[in-house]
Length: 172
Image 1 (cartoon, rainbow, N blue to C red):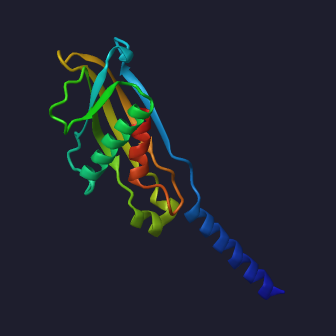
Image 2 (cartoon, rainbow, N blue to C red; image 1 turned 180 degrees about the vertical axis):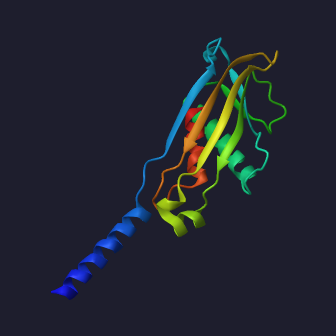
Image 3 (cartoon, rainbow, N blue to C red; image 1 turned 45 degrees about the horizontal axis):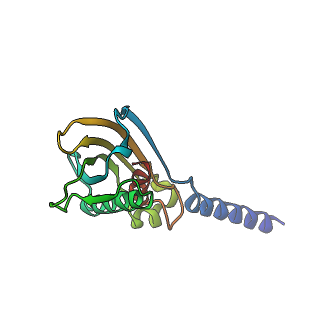
């Protein structure tokens, strides 16, 4: 009987550890307008999306995350048919009416290795950004806000910085 009781405790401990490494909370994103839009965005026919960083010490894959963020924002705006034309910053011949600038201000990088090694104990990847909306011709700021994207916190297949970057794009 004592041997079965010890085996039961070992099984409970193993199940608890597995749950700790394999479960977590869902990814989230939220935004706050620090300067509400002074005009309706629907009045603009075209927009240019620019992503840049204001981080003093950037993670190793920052350029990759910035490309992912720009691409995802452009895709979402096209899906929503928000503007007739949407350009990336790289398209220098764009003559858009609106510039949407996303400035990454903070990033907690959790890569696949961290997630597999530590599971839920690795914590959440997080990306903070500021978004600015400017009239392209005058450069006048017509609105700005703060965005936070967090990854899910625990499955081995999710919860990386890529997921946090996607939540930022969803909020723009």
